Each structure stands twice: as structure tokens, then as C-alpha cells.
Length: 459
Image (cartoon, rainbow, N blue to C red; front, side, top):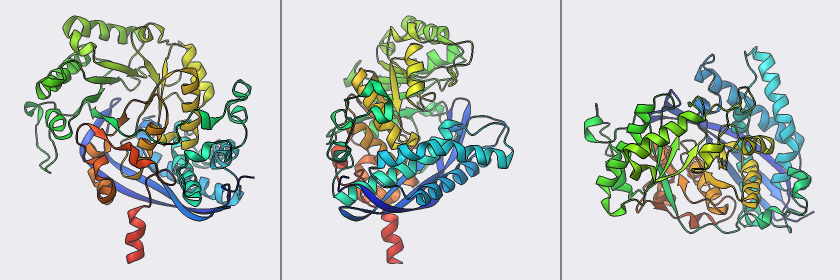
């Protein structure tokens, strides 16, 4: 047994809530606040004791979109599930590498979710995305404590010396002889550009501003581009209004070009329909419309996020083969395990969107699959703030092929970043359109200790 293995640990959970400075609209839903759930881990390994923690924004509108249940009720259920998962991990007393521990207990997550479903008499089972979301701070806390106990980056501890064996035990026989440490970087990329979100309600110019927020932060897309030196934009689209979608991309390109004309056509856009497109034909008509109206903006599109519904196996089957011939199309909401990835690839998807909110273990394993199979790769956040954004950035910086980091918590929920500004201000107050991801190579997941601990200790 490697000396770095966890021998014991104790988990505890806490939450905090923040209002958004402006509402965010995606997939027909409007979000105005967020609850952040964190897990603290007091651990012991053969290298000694350590305290780690993980944090994630509870994006219930994304993880559980069924309108028959209110978001407050969904949040309550997900937090209850998270509490029971904390009890499961504490009570099981497993030891070993965090990846082994998380893999060992993953099968029990759905049983606990089903138990809550039965007790509450819910109209539907708790979705897999919601289960992964509830688990994600637990996994992050374990990996963080594991690395801190060894005094090394968690990504360094993916090598054979600390994680013996190959990926076949996690991913099946196709990965016999393949080792995780050979596919994930041990040190982070020095810096990465930031994808800035252009929400469906976000003002592009001053004429779009009905009522200024007045908090000193930018009010329009042009203001954000100027303040942060942006070059990468993620554009939320309707998916059911072709004229609006074409106009939106064209207008975004116009504002971008006017604000930073020196970039010319060197902008990078991603398009996010949030599953609202009826079929592949809609996406193709939208691209063709852009080609006629604004070929310069079309040339800036780097990839498209999952355009259609997340249930890939429900008839009629919607494929993405023709769209993928034109540009990468990544699977997002449907991606919950290797099986769903295989289904997506068979239906024409050419890449994957990794998210820390689905769990550190899944991000590492599916990221390794994508690296080995040369799929298009991106890492996206869930309006992450504080440590959750730093965790997402550390994933992006350690997985080969990821070109940029999504960061929109600074736009909508800067309050959630306040206690991290002293140590990581350049991740939240961006200059030159990039963040210094090389700073995330320290022990654990790279973000250090939660400043809230020090505040509690001082009181």
C-alpha cells in the first residue's frame, strides 16, 4: 500500500448563500442566487495528518431542470443527499487513494438517492447529474486532503507510485495497460485564457441597459471586454428562435470588434443552446444563416455545446454528425459516465465538456479517455465562485488539450469571491483576458486553505 494512501478521514459539511448582482438566463430559466456547499476533510495518511476541503455551487436549475418541482425544493433534496453521502463516506471508513475510495462508494450513491425519492414521494427519480453535483465537494475534499498530507499536488499523486494498477479497474478492459498518470499533467499550464459568458439577458451596449446595477462593475459586454482584456466569449442562445440566435451572435461579434479592433478575427466563441434545439437541422440552419449574414462571426466559433435534449436514448434519436463535420460539438448535460460518452460519440459528438461539479474522479477519468482518444476537450464551470472556480481552473490546467477556462462567477456573483481576493485576486479580477493557472500547482488541488477557517480560528 502506498504511503500516501489515506488511512482515515472525517468529513463535515457547510453551506453559504449569495445573491447574483444580475440575473442569468439560460435554457429558458432565470437564476438570481446560489447556494455554495463545502465539505471539510480532516484526514490521516501514511505521510501524516492534513485538512482539505472542497466547494461547489449548487446549480440545481442545470442539474435538475424538471419544472414540476421548485428550485428551492430541489436544493433542499440535493443538500439532504449530500449530508447522507457525507455519512456514507464517514461510516464506510475506506482507505486508499481518493480515486479508489470514490470509485468504491459510487455504486451506493444512487441507492441513497432512490431512498430519498421513495421517502419524499417524488414524481421522478433524482437525476444522475444532481447526484454527481451532491458528491462533488466530497470528492474534492478527499483529493485535496490527500495531496496536502503528502505535501504534493494531487495531480502528482496519480502516478503508478501512488495509484498502482491501470485504468481497466475503473473503465473496463479497453484500458488495460493504460495509466492515469501518463495522461494527466503533473504540473499546470502557466496561464490560460478565460471564456466570458454572454447570458441571454446580458446587455451588449449601453442602449440595452434598462436599469444600471451601479456597483462599479461593468454594465455591458463592451465594458467587460475593456476591463478584462477578453478574447474568448461563451454565448447563450435561445435554441428555438432562429432569427434571435443569428442576430445575437452577429451583435456580439460587432461589439467585440468595436471594443478590441486590434484582434480582428482572432476571437474565440463557443455557442451554448442549453439543449433547446429541436434537432440538428436547427443548428445547421443557424450556422448557414450566420454564413450569409456575418461570415466573420461564424469563423470565430470554436465549438458548440450540447444543442439538444440530454436524454440521448429517447426516441427520436437526434444525431450531430453533420454539425461535427463543420466544427467540434461537445457533450455536456448528457455526460455522466463512460457509457454516456460512448453513446454521444456514436451519435456524432466529437468532444466533451468536463466540469468539476460532476466530481473530480469523473473529470480525471473521462478527461483521460478524451486525451487518449483525441476528442475535443473543454472545461466549463457552473457559475463557480471562490474555491470552486479555482478547482475548475486547476482541472483545466492539468488536462492536456484544454485551451481555456470558463469563469462567469465573477460576473454574476462577485460576493462569493471576496474572501479569496487577497490570495487569488488575479483569478477574479482578470487582466489581459488570462488567468495564472500555474499558481495552482501547490499541495492538494492547489487552492490552499479556506480563508473562512482562519476567520473562525480568530474568533
